[in-house]
Image 1 (cartoon, rainbow, N blue to C red):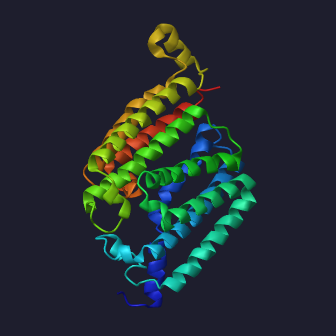
Image 2: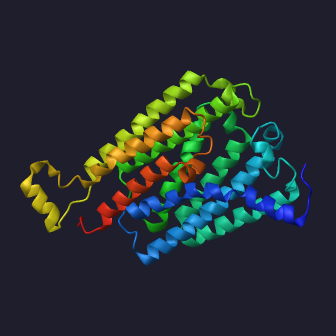
Length: 313
């Protein structure tokens, strides 16, 4: 057990709120980007505050989960070093911190949008149920993890009152299920079904999780391909019109389709990391794996360029 001191408590607080996991909350910017409002100062500021609110809410759920899982975490080769599990952060202090974060998140959400407030409340309830019992139910646990990603995307849409197409929703759901099933597959590979640290792992045959990863990986890139085909912006600049006149193969109104190869590479790279048992924490991979970071960076850059460089009307 760690020594309890003011310095250790501060370190424990920083660790328990897991700021590295906040990268997942960048999903709230999705609606802003795809509604072509990225450079609107007012809407951008609202999304930034929504991001902050989701970070506060997510950190409170991490604290609650760590308190509920403290005994299991002490058996886990990695999670045993978490501040609540190793005694660095006393549980009473963790409870107070969690309550403060929840109240701050809900207050901020209510000041932004009533529907965002309701959605954030739903997220908190789902995560509480997940920590209490849903994480022990196979298939349901994957769906709940994926739902968290979907709620983040639609939180951004509610804050700026933006419409997201059905094709985009299909993309979000497919990618979310891919990430969630990959997380479980990596856990199973790293810990084994009888590790005692997660009950649902014992109920997942390895082959079943392999099939989930493959199925949702295919669905992810296919749904993105369909989105680019049906939702690419029209172009109006002379360069692209000239290219279309030179060659009908230029597909003038399908510009987003150029991002498909990078989406496929990113999915293939992440899938390879899954089967290397390295995707238990997807947010860390998105910050540390160079090929994955590069593919995501190029994909985002191309999407922003196509939507905002004057190629669309």
